[in-house]
Length: 168
Image 1 (cartoon, one colour):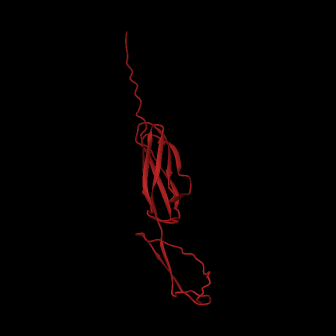
Image 2: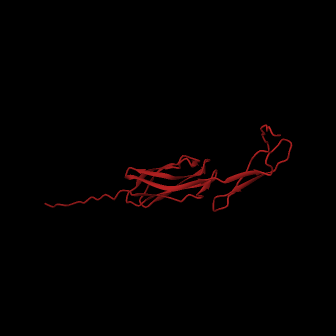
Image 3: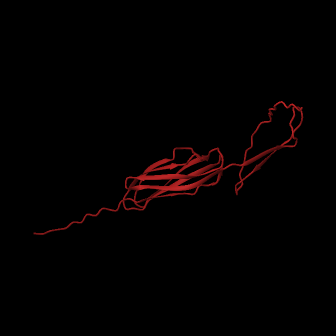
């Protein structure tokens, strides 16, 4: 009688990694655009399916839903990006949190800090009291709190609403 032993080996499961490209610009001013990019890589020996979801916090408004899915062969990688714009509001800091869910491993997360800052505006006049029919010159000073130049588009109105002053 002849006997034979057969060993069946299964390849190791997929092993996914999640990384995030640093956000630029960061910090950003209100209305500034940024591109958010996340990378998924399979360093395992089998293909792996995944769902990637990013939470851009209230500081960014994404142009499209930041949710992606796919399958990666062993050794393959994929980059997922979306455009976003800095929302209006007071100066604030928050972490963007991405979650990579896969049936082959526990969820992975990737965080990156983000900061929203505002240009500082100061308006002054050359006269202590502005009266109807009298000329007054206004100066607006814009202060940039960032360590890089920015382009600002100031818009306003020349209409002036005056309230009655008893000392006219």
